[in-house]
Image (tube, rainbow, N blue to C red; front, side):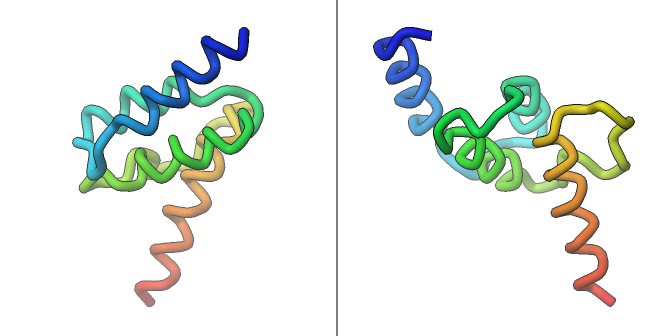
Length: 83
């Protein structure tokens, strides 16, 4: 990805207002890549988590994207906090 394209994607990501809707969160999940993408993946994760309902509520299959696993672990941790 060129620097210009990267900066455009970053600008668009930061232009999304939170909280996002549940539908928007489900759409945003498809945007996760395989790495941190210079910190943008954390921004994306926080946007997904701003939705009213958790986007990932069951354990993803082995081999799923690490960010989907992160969302699952973070959701699971909220359940243990409620006890």
